Amino acid sequence: MAKLYFKIITMKKNIAYLFIVILFFACNTATDYKTITHNPNLYANTVHALNEVVMGNNFSPIIASRNYAYAAIAGYEVTAAGNSAKYQSLSGQLKGFTGIPAPKDTLHIDFPFAAILAYCMVGEAVTFPKGSLQTYTDSLKKLVLAHGMTTDMLKATDSFAKQASAAVIAWSKKDNYPQTRTAEKYTVKNIPGRWIPTPPMYAPAAEPHWAEIRTMILDSASQFRPIAPPTFNVIDKKSEYYMNVMMVKNAGDSLTEEQKHIANFWDDNPFKINVAGHVMTSTKKFSPPGHWMSIVGIANKTANANFETISYAYAITAISLFDAFIHCWDAKYTFNTVRPETVINKYIDANWRPLLQTPAFPEYTCGHSTISSAAAEVLTSVYGDHFSYTDSTELEFGIANRKFTSFRQAADENNWARFYGGLHFHNSCITSTQQGKLVGNWVVQHLKMKK
Image (cartoon, rainbow, N blue to C red):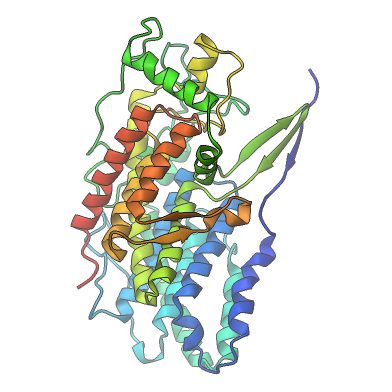
Protein backbone atom coordinates (compact mmCIF):
# COMPACT_ATOMS: atom_id res chain seq x y z
CA MET A 1 0.00 0.00 0.00
CA ALA A 2 1.29 3.45 -0.86
CA LYS A 3 2.42 5.53 2.07
CA LEU A 4 0.18 8.41 3.08
CA TYR A 5 1.86 11.67 3.96
CA PHE A 6 0.04 13.74 6.53
CA LYS A 7 0.53 17.47 6.69
CA ILE A 8 -1.18 19.99 8.96
CA ILE A 9 -2.44 23.11 7.22
CA THR A 10 -4.20 25.75 9.23
CA MET A 11 -6.39 28.39 7.63
CA LYS A 12 -5.70 30.68 10.57
CA LYS A 13 -3.11 33.28 11.31
CA ASN A 14 -0.43 32.20 13.75
CA ILE A 15 -0.37 32.92 17.46
CA ALA A 16 0.63 36.51 16.77
CA TYR A 17 -3.08 37.18 16.21
CA LEU A 18 -3.42 37.25 19.98
CA PHE A 19 -1.60 40.55 19.97
CA ILE A 20 -4.18 42.31 17.79
CA VAL A 21 -6.17 43.21 20.86
CA ILE A 22 -3.03 44.51 22.53
CA LEU A 23 -2.22 46.71 19.56
CA PHE A 24 -5.84 47.85 19.31
CA PHE A 25 -5.89 49.18 22.83
CA ALA A 26 -2.28 50.36 22.77
CA CYS A 27 -3.28 52.82 20.06
CA ASN A 28 -5.55 54.46 22.64
CA THR A 29 -3.59 57.38 24.07
CA ALA A 30 -5.86 57.76 27.13
CA THR A 31 -4.18 57.24 30.49
CA ASP A 32 -7.28 55.72 32.11
CA TYR A 33 -6.87 51.96 32.25
CA LYS A 34 -10.66 51.62 32.44
CA THR A 35 -10.91 52.49 28.75
CA ILE A 36 -9.27 49.12 28.27
CA THR A 37 -10.54 46.90 31.07
CA HIS A 38 -14.18 48.04 30.98
CA ASN A 39 -14.48 47.77 27.21
CA PRO A 40 -16.69 44.78 26.28
CA ASN A 41 -14.67 44.36 23.09
CA LEU A 42 -11.77 43.22 25.28
CA TYR A 43 -13.93 40.34 26.48
CA ALA A 44 -14.88 39.44 22.90
CA ASN A 45 -11.23 39.50 21.83
CA THR A 46 -10.28 37.35 24.80
CA VAL A 47 -12.87 34.76 23.83
CA HIS A 48 -11.44 34.84 20.32
CA ALA A 49 -8.01 34.18 21.79
CA LEU A 50 -9.39 31.12 23.58
CA ASN A 51 -11.05 30.07 20.32
CA GLU A 52 -7.61 30.12 18.73
CA VAL A 53 -6.19 27.88 21.44
CA VAL A 54 -9.13 25.47 21.20
CA MET A 55 -8.71 25.23 17.44
CA GLY A 56 -4.96 24.89 17.62
CA ASN A 57 -5.19 21.95 19.99
CA ASN A 58 -7.67 20.01 17.81
CA PHE A 59 -10.27 19.59 20.50
CA SER A 60 -13.64 18.27 19.46
CA PRO A 61 -16.71 20.54 19.61
CA ILE A 62 -18.03 18.51 22.54
CA ILE A 63 -14.94 19.02 24.68
CA ALA A 64 -14.70 22.65 23.54
CA SER A 65 -18.15 23.33 24.98
CA ARG A 66 -16.84 22.31 28.39
CA ASN A 67 -13.92 24.68 28.12
CA TYR A 68 -16.07 27.64 27.11
CA ALA A 69 -18.65 26.95 29.80
CA TYR A 70 -16.33 26.88 32.79
CA ALA A 71 -14.31 29.83 31.53
CA ALA A 72 -17.44 31.93 30.94
CA ILE A 73 -18.85 31.01 34.35
CA ALA A 74 -15.64 32.16 36.03
CA GLY A 75 -15.78 35.46 34.16
CA TYR A 76 -19.44 35.94 35.04
CA GLU A 77 -18.99 35.12 38.73
CA VAL A 78 -16.31 37.81 39.02
CA THR A 79 -18.50 40.27 37.13
CA ALA A 80 -21.46 39.53 39.41
CA ALA A 81 -19.29 39.96 42.50
CA GLY A 82 -18.40 43.43 41.28
CA ASN A 83 -22.01 44.40 40.50
CA SER A 84 -24.11 42.50 43.02
CA ALA A 85 -26.87 45.11 42.80
CA LYS A 86 -27.78 43.94 39.30
CA TYR A 87 -26.35 40.43 38.97
CA GLN A 88 -26.37 37.40 41.23
CA SER A 89 -24.08 34.44 41.58
CA LEU A 90 -24.76 31.08 40.00
CA SER A 91 -23.99 29.48 43.35
CA GLY A 92 -26.72 26.97 44.17
CA GLN A 93 -28.14 27.25 40.66
CA LEU A 94 -25.63 25.09 38.82
CA LYS A 95 -25.26 21.51 40.00
CA GLY A 96 -22.66 21.24 42.72
CA PHE A 97 -21.49 24.83 42.38
CA THR A 98 -21.05 26.71 45.66
CA GLY A 99 -19.73 29.93 44.20
CA ILE A 100 -16.45 31.80 44.48
CA PRO A 101 -14.91 33.43 47.54
CA ALA A 102 -16.25 36.88 48.40
CA PRO A 103 -13.87 39.69 47.44
CA LYS A 104 -12.14 41.33 50.40
CA ASP A 105 -10.27 44.30 48.96
CA THR A 106 -13.06 45.63 46.75
CA LEU A 107 -11.61 49.15 46.54
CA HIS A 108 -8.50 47.86 44.82
CA ILE A 109 -10.08 45.29 42.50
CA ASP A 110 -10.90 46.15 38.92
CA PHE A 111 -13.68 43.60 38.49
CA PRO A 112 -13.93 43.65 34.68
CA PHE A 113 -10.21 42.98 34.37
CA ALA A 114 -10.43 40.31 37.07
CA ALA A 115 -13.19 38.69 35.01
CA ILE A 116 -10.94 38.64 31.94
CA LEU A 117 -8.07 37.13 33.90
CA ALA A 118 -10.32 34.52 35.54
CA TYR A 119 -11.76 33.60 32.13
CA CYS A 120 -8.26 32.99 30.80
CA MET A 121 -7.09 31.09 33.88
CA VAL A 122 -10.01 28.69 33.77
CA GLY A 123 -10.07 28.52 29.98
CA GLU A 124 -6.53 27.21 29.79
CA ALA A 125 -6.74 25.03 32.92
CA VAL A 126 -9.93 23.08 32.25
CA THR A 127 -8.74 21.32 29.11
CA PHE A 128 -5.31 22.61 28.19
CA PRO A 129 -1.82 22.60 29.68
CA LYS A 130 -1.05 25.56 31.87
CA GLY A 131 0.25 28.62 30.07
CA SER A 132 -1.77 28.51 26.85
CA LEU A 133 -2.90 32.11 27.36
CA GLN A 134 -0.04 33.27 29.58
CA THR A 135 1.60 35.48 26.94
CA TYR A 136 -1.76 37.06 26.21
CA THR A 137 -2.58 37.88 29.83
CA ASP A 138 0.97 39.07 30.57
CA SER A 139 0.69 41.50 27.67
CA LEU A 140 -2.65 42.78 28.98
CA LYS A 141 -1.17 43.35 32.42
CA LYS A 142 1.67 45.39 30.95
CA LEU A 143 -0.85 47.37 28.93
CA VAL A 144 -3.07 48.34 31.87
CA LEU A 145 -0.04 49.31 33.95
CA ALA A 146 1.07 51.55 31.10
CA HIS A 147 -2.39 53.14 31.13
CA GLY A 148 -2.46 54.07 34.79
CA MET A 149 -3.42 51.00 36.83
CA THR A 150 -1.36 50.85 40.00
CA THR A 151 0.69 47.80 40.88
CA ASP A 152 -1.37 47.41 44.07
CA MET A 153 -4.61 47.34 42.07
CA LEU A 154 -3.18 44.85 39.58
CA LYS A 155 -2.01 42.66 42.43
CA ALA A 156 -5.41 42.72 44.15
CA THR A 157 -7.22 42.16 40.84
CA ASP A 158 -5.01 39.25 39.87
CA SER A 159 -5.32 37.73 43.34
CA PHE A 160 -9.12 37.77 43.23
CA ALA A 161 -9.12 36.31 39.72
CA LYS A 162 -6.95 33.44 40.98
CA GLN A 163 -9.28 32.79 43.91
CA ALA A 164 -12.33 32.79 41.66
CA SER A 165 -10.72 30.59 39.02
CA ALA A 166 -9.50 28.10 41.63
CA ALA A 167 -13.07 27.66 42.88
CA VAL A 168 -14.45 27.08 39.39
CA ILE A 169 -11.63 24.71 38.45
CA ALA A 170 -12.18 22.67 41.62
CA TRP A 171 -15.88 22.41 40.79
CA SER A 172 -15.14 21.40 37.18
CA LYS A 173 -13.08 18.43 38.34
CA LYS A 174 -16.19 16.78 39.76
CA ASP A 175 -18.20 16.68 36.52
CA ASN A 176 -17.07 13.13 35.62
CA TYR A 177 -14.90 14.29 32.73
CA PRO A 178 -11.76 12.46 33.92
CA GLN A 179 -13.72 9.22 34.28
CA THR A 180 -14.97 9.43 30.69
CA ARG A 181 -11.37 9.57 29.44
CA THR A 182 -10.82 5.97 30.46
CA ALA A 183 -14.33 4.62 29.92
CA GLU A 184 -15.03 1.68 27.61
CA LYS A 185 -14.69 2.45 23.92
CA TYR A 186 -17.59 2.36 21.49
CA THR A 187 -18.09 -1.03 19.88
CA VAL A 188 -18.71 -0.92 16.14
CA LYS A 189 -21.23 -3.56 15.12
CA ASN A 190 -22.13 -4.61 11.61
CA ILE A 191 -25.86 -4.20 12.11
CA PRO A 192 -28.01 -2.56 9.38
CA GLY A 193 -28.94 0.95 10.43
CA ARG A 194 -26.26 1.21 13.13
CA TRP A 195 -23.50 3.81 12.93
CA ILE A 196 -20.10 2.85 11.54
CA PRO A 197 -17.04 5.08 10.86
CA THR A 198 -17.12 7.22 7.72
CA PRO A 199 -14.51 8.39 5.19
CA PRO A 200 -11.96 9.78 4.81
CA MET A 201 -10.60 9.27 8.35
CA TYR A 202 -12.84 6.41 9.47
CA ALA A 203 -12.29 7.80 12.95
CA PRO A 204 -13.68 6.04 16.03
CA ALA A 205 -16.86 7.30 17.63
CA ALA A 206 -16.27 10.60 19.44
CA GLU A 207 -17.16 10.88 23.11
CA PRO A 208 -19.53 7.91 23.49
CA HIS A 209 -19.78 8.58 27.24
CA TRP A 210 -20.46 12.32 27.10
CA ALA A 211 -24.00 11.81 28.42
CA GLU A 212 -22.34 10.79 31.68
CA ILE A 213 -20.94 14.29 32.17
CA ARG A 214 -22.69 16.22 34.93
CA THR A 215 -25.28 18.59 33.52
CA MET A 216 -25.43 22.15 34.81
CA ILE A 217 -29.12 22.98 34.55
CA LEU A 218 -30.88 19.98 33.06
CA ASP A 219 -32.14 17.40 35.54
CA SER A 220 -30.34 14.71 33.55
CA ALA A 221 -28.95 13.98 30.10
CA SER A 222 -32.15 12.13 29.21
CA GLN A 223 -34.56 14.80 30.44
CA PHE A 224 -35.68 15.78 26.95
CA ARG A 225 -34.77 12.56 25.14
CA PRO A 226 -36.55 12.63 21.73
CA ILE A 227 -38.69 9.89 20.25
CA ALA A 228 -36.91 7.27 18.16
CA PRO A 229 -36.12 8.18 14.54
CA PRO A 230 -37.83 6.44 11.60
CA THR A 231 -37.08 2.72 11.46
CA PHE A 232 -34.24 1.73 9.14
CA ASN A 233 -35.78 0.45 5.92
CA VAL A 234 -34.09 0.54 2.51
CA ILE A 235 -36.19 -2.26 1.07
CA ASP A 236 -39.52 -0.45 0.89
CA LYS A 237 -38.97 2.57 -1.33
CA LYS A 238 -42.17 4.12 0.01
CA SER A 239 -41.02 3.92 3.63
CA GLU A 240 -40.38 7.11 5.57
CA TYR A 241 -36.76 6.13 6.07
CA TYR A 242 -36.02 5.50 2.40
CA MET A 243 -37.67 8.77 1.41
CA ASN A 244 -35.50 10.61 3.93
CA VAL A 245 -32.41 8.99 2.43
CA MET A 246 -33.37 10.05 -1.07
CA MET A 247 -34.08 13.60 0.12
CA VAL A 248 -30.46 13.86 1.24
CA LYS A 249 -29.08 12.39 -1.99
CA ASN A 250 -31.30 14.43 -4.30
CA ALA A 251 -30.55 17.64 -2.42
CA GLY A 252 -26.81 16.95 -2.51
CA ASP A 253 -26.95 16.30 -6.24
CA SER A 254 -28.60 19.63 -7.04
CA LEU A 255 -27.30 22.20 -4.57
CA THR A 256 -27.46 25.87 -5.56
CA GLU A 257 -24.58 28.22 -4.82
CA GLU A 258 -26.63 29.78 -2.03
CA GLN A 259 -27.25 26.40 -0.45
CA LYS A 260 -23.55 25.59 -0.68
CA HIS A 261 -22.74 28.88 1.01
CA ILE A 262 -25.20 28.12 3.81
CA ALA A 263 -23.73 24.64 4.33
CA ASN A 264 -20.12 25.85 4.31
CA PHE A 265 -20.90 28.81 6.55
CA TRP A 266 -22.25 26.50 9.26
CA ASP A 267 -19.80 23.66 8.62
CA ASP A 268 -17.58 24.59 11.59
CA ASN A 269 -15.46 21.48 11.16
CA PRO A 270 -12.52 22.01 13.53
CA PHE A 271 -10.35 19.45 11.76
CA LYS A 272 -11.19 18.63 8.16
CA ILE A 273 -9.13 16.03 6.32
CA ASN A 274 -8.34 16.70 2.66
CA VAL A 275 -7.13 13.83 0.50
CA ALA A 276 -5.26 14.39 -2.77
CA GLY A 277 -3.68 11.24 -4.11
CA HIS A 278 -1.39 9.89 -1.42
CA VAL A 279 -1.24 13.16 0.49
CA MET A 280 -3.47 14.07 3.42
CA THR A 281 -3.74 17.65 4.61
CA SER A 282 -6.00 19.23 7.18
CA THR A 283 -7.75 22.56 7.53
CA LYS A 284 -9.06 24.04 10.74
CA LYS A 285 -11.93 26.30 11.66
CA PHE A 286 -13.79 27.20 14.82
CA SER A 287 -16.08 24.47 16.08
CA PRO A 288 -19.88 24.89 16.44
CA PRO A 289 -19.69 26.17 20.05
CA GLY A 290 -16.80 28.42 19.05
CA HIS A 291 -18.98 29.87 16.29
CA TRP A 292 -21.72 30.71 18.78
CA MET A 293 -19.21 32.23 21.19
CA SER A 294 -18.22 34.48 18.31
CA ILE A 295 -21.86 35.39 17.69
CA VAL A 296 -22.18 36.56 21.30
CA GLY A 297 -19.40 39.08 20.76
CA ILE A 298 -20.93 40.24 17.49
CA ALA A 299 -24.34 40.64 19.10
CA ASN A 300 -23.03 42.62 22.03
CA LYS A 301 -21.13 44.96 19.75
CA THR A 302 -24.19 45.37 17.52
CA ALA A 303 -26.33 46.18 20.57
CA ASN A 304 -23.64 48.53 21.91
CA ALA A 305 -24.12 46.81 25.27
CA ASN A 306 -21.77 47.11 28.24
CA PHE A 307 -19.20 44.81 29.82
CA GLU A 308 -21.61 43.28 32.33
CA THR A 309 -24.02 42.34 29.53
CA ILE A 310 -21.40 40.54 27.46
CA SER A 311 -20.19 38.64 30.52
CA TYR A 312 -23.75 37.58 31.26
CA ALA A 313 -24.41 36.66 27.63
CA TYR A 314 -21.27 34.54 27.32
CA ALA A 315 -22.10 32.65 30.50
CA ILE A 316 -25.74 31.83 29.79
CA THR A 317 -24.93 30.91 26.17
CA ALA A 318 -22.02 28.68 27.13
CA ILE A 319 -24.12 26.93 29.78
CA SER A 320 -26.86 26.24 27.24
CA LEU A 321 -24.32 24.87 24.75
CA PHE A 322 -22.79 22.64 27.40
CA ASP A 323 -26.08 21.08 28.49
CA ALA A 324 -27.37 20.88 24.91
CA PHE A 325 -24.36 18.79 23.91
CA ILE A 326 -24.91 16.41 26.83
CA HIS A 327 -28.59 16.12 25.92
CA CYS A 328 -27.77 15.48 22.25
CA TRP A 329 -25.06 12.92 22.98
CA ASP A 330 -27.52 11.00 25.12
CA ALA A 331 -29.73 10.69 22.04
CA LYS A 332 -26.85 9.88 19.69
CA TYR A 333 -25.59 6.94 21.70
CA THR A 334 -29.06 5.76 22.65
CA PHE A 335 -30.16 5.32 19.03
CA ASN A 336 -26.73 4.84 17.35
CA THR A 337 -28.08 5.66 13.90
CA VAL A 338 -26.12 5.34 10.67
CA ARG A 339 -25.13 8.37 8.62
CA PRO A 340 -26.75 9.17 5.24
CA GLU A 341 -23.39 8.83 3.51
CA THR A 342 -23.03 5.23 4.67
CA VAL A 343 -26.54 4.25 3.57
CA ILE A 344 -26.29 5.91 0.17
CA ASN A 345 -22.86 4.40 -0.53
CA LYS A 346 -23.97 0.88 0.39
CA TYR A 347 -27.43 0.75 -1.12
CA ILE A 348 -27.72 3.45 -3.79
CA ASP A 349 -24.49 4.98 -5.11
CA ALA A 350 -21.03 3.85 -3.97
CA ASN A 351 -19.41 7.01 -5.34
CA TRP A 352 -21.72 9.56 -3.70
CA ARG A 353 -20.13 12.02 -1.29
CA PRO A 354 -21.75 14.74 0.81
CA LEU A 355 -20.70 18.36 0.36
CA LEU A 356 -19.33 18.45 3.90
CA GLN A 357 -17.19 15.92 5.71
CA THR A 358 -19.21 13.61 7.95
CA PRO A 359 -18.18 13.85 11.64
CA ALA A 360 -17.35 10.75 13.67
CA PHE A 361 -20.45 10.04 15.70
CA PRO A 362 -24.01 8.74 15.17
CA GLU A 363 -26.49 10.71 13.08
CA TYR A 364 -29.55 11.18 15.33
CA THR A 365 -29.91 13.79 16.68
CA CYS A 366 -27.99 16.63 15.02
CA GLY A 367 -25.53 18.24 17.41
CA HIS A 368 -25.10 21.53 15.55
CA SER A 369 -28.85 22.02 15.13
CA THR A 370 -29.46 21.21 18.79
CA ILE A 371 -26.88 23.55 20.25
CA SER A 372 -27.68 26.32 17.75
CA SER A 373 -31.33 26.27 18.68
CA ALA A 374 -30.48 26.29 22.39
CA ALA A 375 -28.09 29.21 21.94
CA ALA A 376 -30.67 31.11 19.89
CA GLU A 377 -33.20 30.89 22.71
CA VAL A 378 -30.86 32.19 25.41
CA LEU A 379 -29.44 34.95 23.21
CA THR A 380 -32.98 36.04 22.39
CA SER A 381 -33.58 36.34 26.14
CA VAL A 382 -30.54 38.63 26.42
CA TYR A 383 -30.74 40.85 23.33
CA GLY A 384 -34.35 40.39 22.28
CA ASP A 385 -36.13 38.91 19.29
CA HIS A 386 -36.01 40.54 15.82
CA PHE A 387 -32.35 41.35 16.53
CA SER A 388 -30.60 42.00 13.22
CA TYR A 389 -26.88 41.32 12.94
CA THR A 390 -24.22 40.30 10.47
CA ASP A 391 -22.32 37.16 11.36
CA SER A 392 -18.72 37.67 10.25
CA THR A 393 -17.30 34.66 12.13
CA GLU A 394 -16.30 32.73 9.03
CA LEU A 395 -14.75 35.61 7.12
CA GLU A 396 -11.28 34.85 8.43
CA PHE A 397 -11.67 31.36 6.98
CA GLY A 398 -12.53 32.74 3.56
CA ILE A 399 -16.32 32.31 3.82
CA ALA A 400 -18.52 35.35 3.20
CA ASN A 401 -20.68 36.88 5.94
CA ARG A 402 -24.35 36.12 6.40
CA LYS A 403 -27.04 38.47 7.70
CA PHE A 404 -29.83 37.48 10.08
CA THR A 405 -32.88 39.22 11.48
CA SER A 406 -32.91 37.11 14.64
CA PHE A 407 -30.95 34.41 16.44
CA ARG A 408 -33.80 32.00 15.77
CA GLN A 409 -33.50 32.65 12.05
CA ALA A 410 -29.82 31.75 12.29
CA ALA A 411 -30.67 28.51 14.09
CA ASP A 412 -33.25 27.64 11.47
CA GLU A 413 -30.72 28.25 8.72
CA ASN A 414 -28.29 25.97 10.52
CA ASN A 415 -31.04 23.35 10.44
CA TRP A 416 -31.00 23.43 6.63
CA ALA A 417 -27.21 23.73 6.51
CA ARG A 418 -26.66 20.29 8.00
CA PHE A 419 -29.13 18.82 5.51
CA TYR A 420 -27.58 20.63 2.53
CA GLY A 421 -24.17 19.44 3.69
CA GLY A 422 -25.38 15.84 3.44
CA LEU A 423 -24.62 15.07 7.09
CA HIS A 424 -28.14 14.57 8.43
CA PHE A 425 -31.60 13.49 7.42
CA HIS A 426 -33.84 16.52 7.49
CA ASN A 427 -36.25 15.00 9.97
CA SER A 428 -33.28 14.76 12.36
CA CYS A 429 -32.53 18.45 11.93
CA ILE A 430 -36.15 19.39 12.58
CA THR A 431 -36.29 17.24 15.71
CA SER A 432 -32.94 18.62 16.88
CA THR A 433 -34.10 22.21 16.50
CA GLN A 434 -37.15 21.44 18.60
CA GLN A 435 -35.04 19.70 21.24
CA GLY A 436 -32.57 22.56 21.35
CA LYS A 437 -35.39 24.98 22.04
CA LEU A 438 -36.45 22.86 25.00
CA VAL A 439 -32.94 22.99 26.43
CA GLY A 440 -32.53 26.72 25.79
CA ASN A 441 -35.89 27.59 27.31
CA TRP A 442 -35.13 25.43 30.34
CA VAL A 443 -31.90 27.35 30.90
CA VAL A 444 -33.65 30.71 30.55
CA GLN A 445 -36.45 29.71 32.91
CA HIS A 446 -34.25 28.19 35.60
CA LEU A 447 -31.25 30.52 35.73
CA LYS A 448 -31.69 33.69 37.77
CA MET A 449 -28.72 35.84 36.89
CA LYS A 450 -30.10 39.37 36.57
CA LYS A 451 -31.86 40.99 39.50
